Image (tube, rainbow, N blue to C red; front, side, top):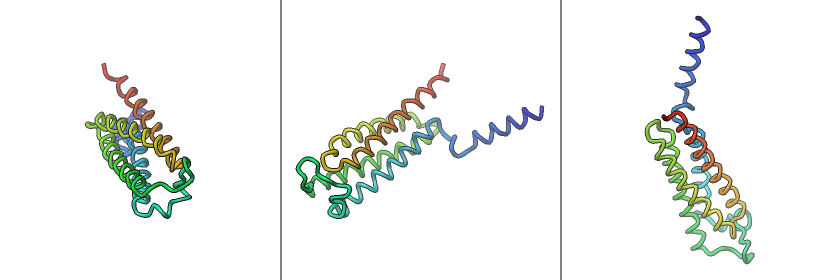
Length: 153
């Protein structure tokens, strides 16, 4: 009888834990990290692209620097992706709206993967990191959504 009570207390403590508020918590955390990454890179590129030239930004196609317009567009898209990831993470954390977060996260990741593919010509390191993060997000969302639907009859 004492073991059942301690087991129930342990299960209640796990359910009330900060990390078990929604079915897709791990994906929400990855989306939050992706948001920080996207917003930081987008802000850095828009604020001072010259400081990043040659370190993060290396034009592989011609060896020269990318135009300011192209870098401004790249930074703006990164900021928009960051906002999409923030909203997705917030929705994924919700017990009610997590499905909307899944959709938003998948759409954001698809846009991010396409954008990473385009960005490989002048920012191969950032693009590779972005591609890995976006693939991770889609994989987590698909896996956790599948897990959540297994209990639905």
